[in-house]
Length: 240
Image (cartoon, rainbow, N blue to C red):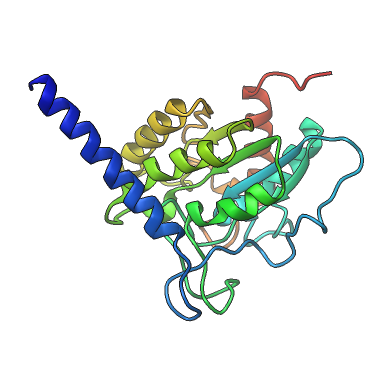
């Protein structure tokens, strides 16, 4: 490829990424495609913390929410916040992903947004740390790779000074499909590109049905505790 052709290809890729980001962030009327909305209980006022603890915002799906367990709503972020001394703010939404929204369940009337649409809510908390954990809902979606790229580009652009922590997408106690392995590689590449700390959690629940809730899909309380414990172990010790 000539230098001119390489420059043209780079420019085209940048335009595509920007277009995807603009499409995903563009406001939509109620009842159509998902709009940006965190869980109703999560607002900067409600989660204000005067203790001086670092604010850590979590973006993810039902695995981050803690769906199907007694920790529903706080999930593993609550436990991890205790381990790290963080004020954990859980903005995860069940059923969503890098390119995936949903229109039912806990979502507002207009539906739920993919991860990039959560960024305005995340920015409102002025977080010191952002933890992103999810991806299993994206398998089989079109335009997934550019959606991952657009999300991390926007995340770093909107929160240039925040510490970014990204986990590999998780699966249940069965073998992870090849599509998830590919997604893990994409997430690692894009997270690393924007200076995030990528944490490979591996096949944490493989052949461990004792860590899965009765719905045969989500981690139970012990499984959520294991996620928090492993993230804590992989991160450097908290300052101070």
